[in-house]
Length: 104
Image 1 (cartoon, rainbow, N blue to C red):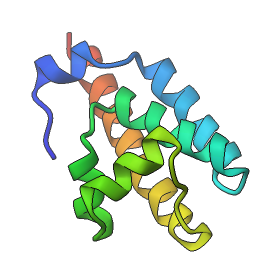
Image 2 (spheres, rainbow, N blue to C red; image 1 turned 135 degrees about the vertical axis):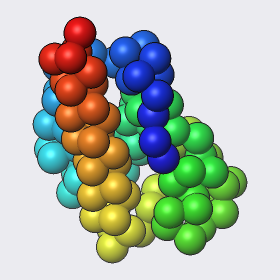
Image 3 (tube, rainbow, N blue to C red; image 1 turned 180 degrees about the vertical axis):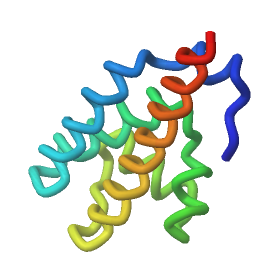
């Protein structure tokens, strides 16, 4: 997904994205509720849809929705894939935002 300059500027601040990356690092192997909360928070901060994560992971959109709402939790083996993808998306967004702000 490529973001326009306007989209990048209107998203969470760089510091918020960096803080989220730290949350992901801490919760990648913790209890289900903490992990589900981190996934939901990250998807909201990164403006991702359930279908974005579902497509990347090869699962259904309702499965991702159950993770976000806490009705279910991803298998521990799936958590690393989720963590890595969200972390990479946050890092990409953070770098894009920094580049846009540096050019202002």
